[in-house]
Amino acid sequence: MPATLWIAACAHRLQQQWHTVDPLELEDVARDLWRDERLRTMLPDAAAVEWLKPITERPSSADRVAAGLEAGHV
Image (spheres, helix red, strand yellow):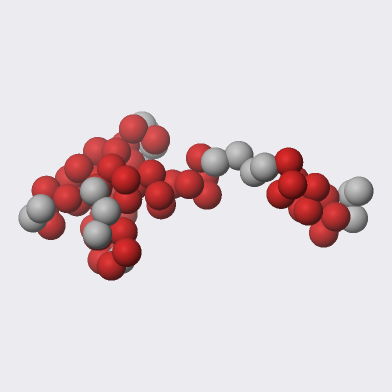
């Protein structure tokens, strides 16, 4: 897939997550993702989802307990 098409598709997927961010900024982010060799090997939609995981995934209960232990709350 040509880089320009990959970047455009990735930016489109990112915009589904961030409706209020300027599309040109999302295209810059997608261009940065394309520069990552691991993400570039993925389909653009999958690369965007992978990159968004820290934002979109809720921590598991074990992660929340571990975070509480580190903060001294448990």
